[in-house]
Length: 230
Image (cartoon, rainbow, N blue to C red; front, side, top):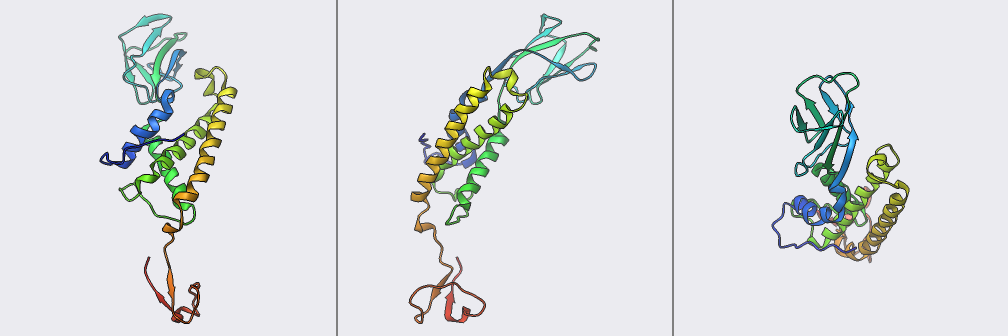
């Protein structure tokens, strides 16, 4: 599943990777719609729904006791709640249709951090960061590994009650996502052998002429070496 990201684009690297890499892959996960969900009345005026991160581009459709209403409440798009201006009575029912993003930008940035840690920890170890020090040839791997982390998160949610509202057959979806994740990790296993070659090996010491091959520096033999900083 190759991803191409133009390295010429000026980088806030994380933002570029999210907008040009992760979001196109996530697709529908960032544009999910829920229809006529029954809200959970948390107080006399507050109604909570299953998912936060509502999309402001989708106007919520509110039914109060099965009648559409457009006034008398405010919407908190971040928390996914409605605040009514008058108190709700016992037996009232509030339903809402809304659109939401499965992941916040903070979630996506966290997936990229996890992917970067995976890359750095694979031998030979590196210390890439997002402040333009990571070479652009690693962008594809960053996006694909982040996508794998995102799908793994969805699978964890599929095991819980969250699956009931938005997916008709969670088991089929889970199987499809697991297959994609397996392909992504297999692709990473192949590509890391090429990208993480000997060029990332950093010498820790140079042997003197007394040694035919470099050897590890220890507390007892350090005088036989010229030590250099990596």
